[in-house]
Image (cartoon, rainbow, N blue to C red; front, side, top):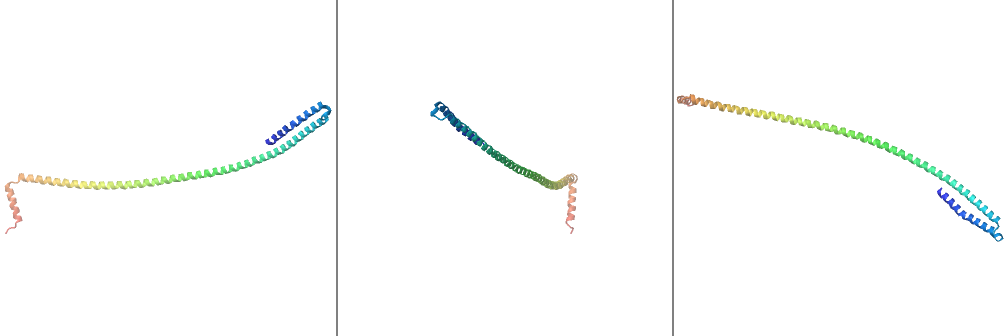
Length: 199
């Protein structure tokens, strides 16, 4: 449309010098009198030029109008197509958004499932560790009881041996104090009698 308007102004620009030239010729002819073109012919030429310009203007106007109509129709059609494309893209984006939301929900569900699985595995590991710890504690307790029993038996043996040693020592001391050499002689003889049978 801008191109048509530019063309119209260009045409008018070309016709304006023609009209001015016609006016100049008419004024010279009026001054020249008989030797030039008559004023009636010049006036006729000017009116014909004006008619031509008006007719050309109308033709250009109609051309612009119909071209403008085509232009606006085309523009309306382009806008309608653009709106249709935008609606299609909006539908695509809406569908993609729904799919993304569905995937996001699925990811959230999978994440929750994985968390629950890790928690369950953690509880299972905890139970295994506690069971192993209880077994180790029971084993340590058994070993402690066994060690205590062994130490108790050893202490009892040591105490018994100490009591026997002390009793023997006390008996020896008591015998040394109470038994005289005559008693020793009598014990030796009695032992010999028992040990060596009489002939």
